[in-house]
Length: 116
Image 1 (cartoon, rainbow, N blue to C red):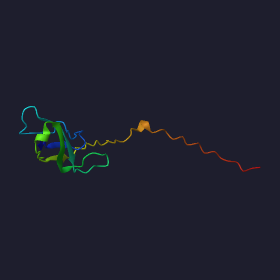
Image 2 (cartoon, rainbow, N blue to C red):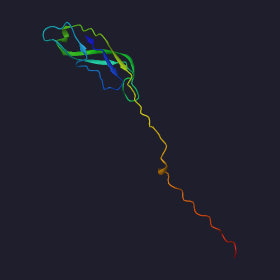
Image 3 (tube, rainbow, N blue to C red):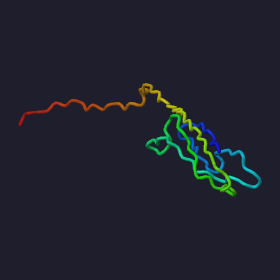
Image 4 (cartoon, rainbow, N blue to C red):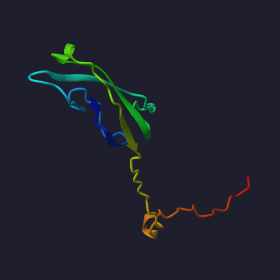
């Protein structure tokens, strides 16, 4: 049994699929592997997604029909997680037109009488 290699982009929603993420050879008649447990040694990011890098996928615990008649050999696969593109958009600033600024109101000067 051989695990299918997975190439993905960080956080694209790809998961290990124990129902179809493998191939088999040598089964006879109606004997079939219906599922396999797939695990990876990939470390997780703070958002619980696999970190960028190359990791192994390890198969085990095949289940199906007629499998007691076989000595199952498991061949690992690889999980390659590529960086996700990050797009940023800047804000263009321009001077405010003069009509936006309110006109300041300055009170007129008055002479204060000090004669009593």
